[in-house]
Image 1 (cartoon, one colour):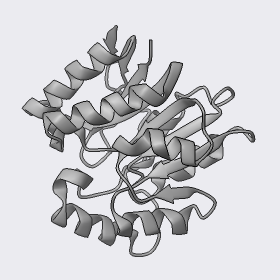
Image 2 (cartoon, rainbow, N blue to C red):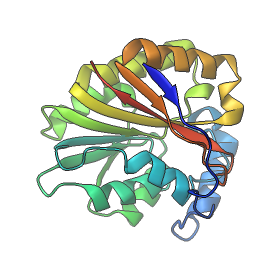
Image 3 (cartoon, rainbow, N blue to C red):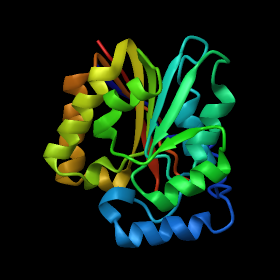
Image 4 (cartoon, helix red, strand yellow):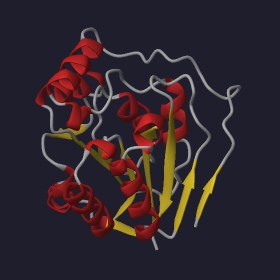
Length: 213
């Protein structure tokens, strides 16, 4: 089931994320070197962070994983919502961005690996079932095979009723890879809802909120 809410400007927050000194420039450099891995020239805004994180059932989420934390803006918000009994780690491919996230959130285990390895990494972190996955990966930049591989890995570890959230930029939605990913989500999850647009994000974005069968 897929639904879309109308865009709302009044609920958006300012578009300047707080990042550690040098973090924004590191993000820009990583985008220039690896646009297919980073996906945007600027970190996510507070408005987008709020749309991503506040949807989850944090009271009952005990196994939590983040894909692609970047500069740690989502990571920090996740930490603020975690249940005291929850286990949480993040997966980041870029060593530079992983270092920034560790500096911002020193209590979080940030693993330098691919989201495709999430099952093995869950075992390493003593997580038997994952109830929440927060994803900052640039799906519209990925080839079909990588989209499929990461989604399959996600579904393998996500518990029944588990929640998955990822965001998309509006300019990416019109690309073939972005359209393909949207169809993959609808085929993989029981529920797929689209949040209102965060217009003050750079670039404007919305969140896919998904629940596993």
